[in-house]
Image 1 (cartoon, helix red, strand yellow):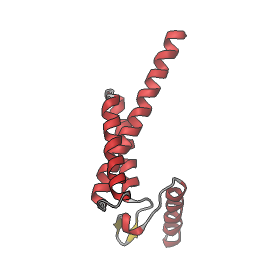
Image 2 (image 1 turned 45 degrees about the horizontal axis):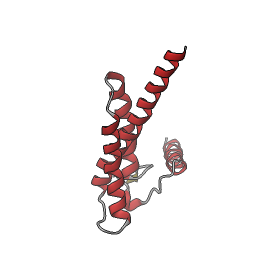
Image 3 (image 1 turned 90 degrees about the horizontal axis):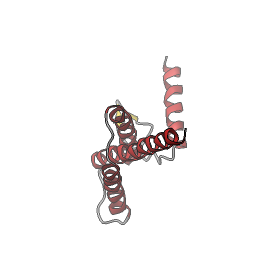
Length: 122
């Protein structure tokens, strides 16, 4: 079982690496001594994307809201990147959730518009 568990962990880390996540230990969560396969922000983005898909099934989210959520994540990244203030893993998680929700909301809204256009011309 230990060999299988190790193989699964390596597979998950490879997915995180291929997704573009830097996987820095100091910017990642740990559970029972094992590092998450993606950093705190990417963990949040994944949660936000799932939440947007779930919410999108029940009611549309305005595009302006999605853009505001994306901006919130972008500002956190920018402030950290410029060296103004170091972000924390908790803040990365929260802003990642906002960014993931915002991004997938834009995708969902775009697909709804495309579907509407095809209905008009069908």
